[in-house]
Amino acid sequence: MKKPKLRELAEAIKSVIKGPYTTKFPKVAPEIFPEFRGKPEFVEDNCVLCGACEKICPVDAIEARDIVNDDGSAKRVMFRNYARCIWCSMCSIYCTVGDGDIFGDKTGIKITNEFDLSTLDISSSNEEIESELVVCEKCGKPITTKKHLLWLAERLGSKAFSNQTLFLTKMQEMGLSDEEMAPPREEMLREDLNKILCPNCRRSAMMAEDWGF
Ligand code: SF4
Ligand code: SF4
Image (cartoon, rainbow, N blue to C red; front, top):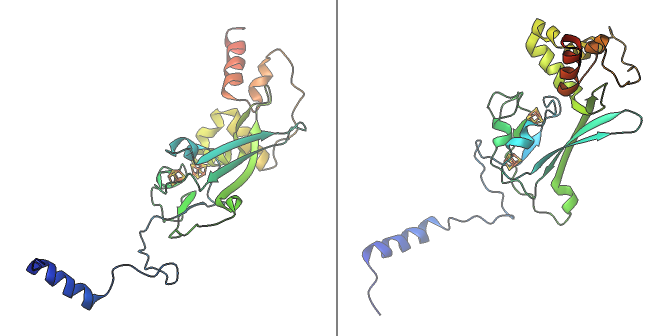
């Protein structure tokens, strides 16, 4: 048998004295550093369900599901599949309402230190939050959530009054405008400009107003 090199011998002695590097997880909880990027979670109070994180997620772990019912009520559900998530934190860094601080109190998705998500119940590996969805008064297509429109109106201040969708949503929230929609009709009239419209229908209303088609 060859004699071990001195360096290997020193390492062997050191490891006998220092003990193993590995921990007895899950029996013994490991030490977690404060900046450890673990499980992302929606913060319901901050998130406006704008859907931007769905676009930024590199593995399609987040999905914005718009549900419009026959009675006209509508909601958006933000759904996260933890089985797909790679914990990259992009959704939190680029969150619309956040300031880039993934551990801060402004973001719509906070990054926790939690990492042990092992489970036999696959249904528990999902997360979802929901909020009221605003639909176009003309075509009935989803615009965005009421929370998102109110957040935009708040950020824009008096500039929000130049957009009737933002203005009316804000007025409705303050109880200064009727929430009941008029039954939709085929042709566009000037009064349609004063409705909650999706960008396509607002463009059509503007064209009808300015150009007559
Ligand atoms: S507010 Fe942030 S967390 Fe909420 S849907 Fe928009 S990007 Fe995602
Ligand atoms: S942490 Fe990364 S992979 Fe997970 S939901 Fe957010 S963006 Fe997607």
